[in-house]
Picture (cartoon, rainbow, N blue to C red):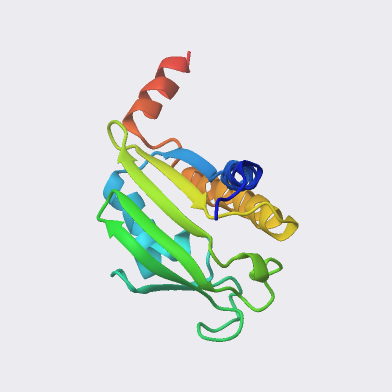
Length: 182
């Protein structure tokens, strides 16, 4: 039995539409700190706490977990703990994670399945690191769009918070600041 051409065209259109709607969410920043320091912010307990989490535990290994809690009065392991699984990493270059348990009160918990995040770290001159956060797996349903918007905002605030901590300590920034001062 042959499939009608109109069914094949419809199928191809649905695939193309789904692919076009699932664009990654990308947030980038330059951090005025050496690559090793920025990598440690995302891969160690103390470092992750500097990204904005009140509590954090990082088990840096494939299948390991990053457990965080935003409430300073909360406890890791309670219902408000976010648990992300480490899917892959290349030291000081890339970290891929997915949320396997969102905090109970997280507004977009139903949309998180199938979404993952890849963080890229690139040394960018003397004492400076480029961080690129790419969220993937979003759909076009309202919940997924809201989740994408949430992470666009959260990732921007996280990178801005980190950048502010190191501003303007890089050698290039110090030279520019000095040159601009009369």
